[in-house]
Image (cartoon, rainbow, N blue to C red):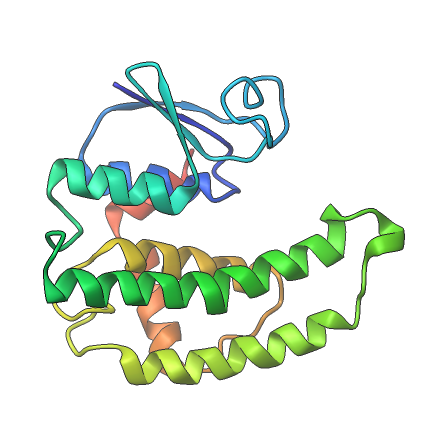
Amino acid sequence: MYQVIGTARSRAMRVLWLLEELGQPYEHVPVNPHSERVTPFNPAGKVPVLIVDGTPITDSTAILTYLADKHGALTHPAGTLDRARQDSLTQFVLDEFDAALWLAARHSFVLPEEMRLAAIKNTLRWEFERSQRTLVHRMADGGFLMGEHMTVPDIILAHCLTWALTARFPITEHRLTDYLDRMRARPAYLRAAAR
């Protein structure tokens, strides 16, 4: 059985959701970053951590990719053009959405107060809106980023869009608003979010 370390209010939500989509059993240890339950497995104190047969895996994207590949679901096979497109979308979402939100969080409450730059959030919101326009042009028809089938970047994007709402980063593209509503209505999402 897998063990997921990290509160559902963190990127651990991505891992919980993917495991629910896969129907895999897991134990959830809902602790905050830098807690004594995290640092033995990740000295940086970051969550999530997935424990597999006693071995820790860190970084939500690495964990999602590992689980999707291992279980042959929510992914395209390595070495295919579809996988290259999937990985490209994953990197785009991480670079343009996750990075902006994380930088805003760092300048809101993570960094020491004297190191924070409040004005940077205006630039990040502008970039976030611009990235939405770009992503909408890259989305395939069919309900998910790549078309008819949900893949790893869908979980990352839906998590980032949910995070954006909490961080007061507007979702300006109606297609993304509709997409997020559909993703958050999925039974697996609802089960993971209830943790």
